[in-house]
Length: 146
Ligand SMILES: [Zn+2]
Image (cartoon, rainbow, N blue to C red; front, side):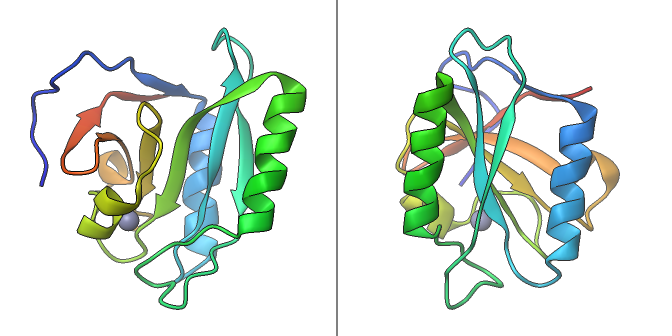
């Protein structure tokens, strides 16, 4: 389920063009497997964004992602040491649009953290989309890649 009007004002997610290209390239390279990971930045949100690549351990990796637990813990430790906060969880949809699935809605356990979905073979302006998820609904967040 998605809707066009956000119930709250979500700040745009600002990424560099290079990071956006890197995410799309990573999703392409993984072929039919979903990729996943974290994006974090310093608490003032002015510093560079760090990408934490986490391996997808799902059995049905073509349509699900389950982050490797040890890698998640290591990423959170690194964020703490660097004074960073989690701003987005990214994953890919190898063959479907960058729209949250029912599984994505149910599995997103970080309110306030954007879900960034990569659909590497979609039209250029549809390859990366950011969403706010609250467990039952999804609404789009403005994504700036530049
Ligand atoms: Zn998904």
